[in-house]
Length: 211
Image 1 (cartoon, rainbow, N blue to C red):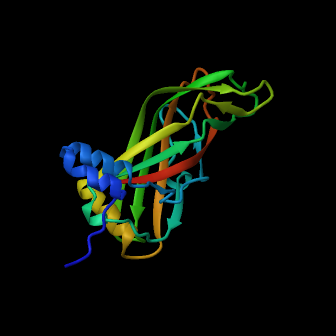
Image 2 (cartoon, helix red, strand yellow):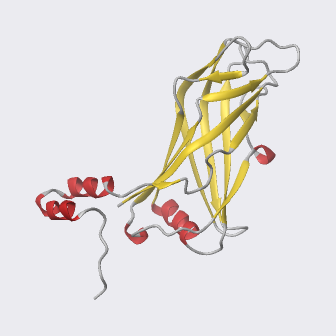
Image 3 (cartoon, rainbow, N blue to C red):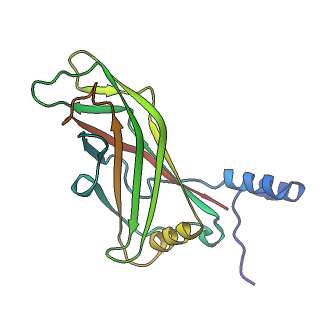
């Protein structure tokens, strides 16, 4: 008989038979640590050039990062892998020559697209959109740094087929792997001049396994 490996502490496991399935899963999931910066996107920057309509970071404006295969405990028992990736609330802004720096401006429809792949082989496509708008306010009259009240956090739940694709790439096959990250964002061109650039920094990335 194979040895069984359990998530959680002994005290947690003793308590599980006394609870319903949902409550037991919740306790186990709370005791599974998240994998910090699994995709190695932290500290990467994405530069959006704002044009007419929707400004999309794509092609040579995306960022590609390599990361090694990693072991994820009890991978075969997982129901999902929840990715979280934050954008620094401070954004560097450059406007075209002769244009006026606005006091503040809104951004909306922020979408992060991730393509996790093994060279030219298999790939998993994930995405998340933050609904609503975020106001960026100039930090001082002489600064080109704008700040939101807090970080923008993208949450992407990989489950089902997407989960199996991600696990197959991350835990085995070719090494290293790669992830392509693309960011798209809308802004109000009555406040932010067309041709402006916004530099975003990614940080605090993690992947939370759940059973």
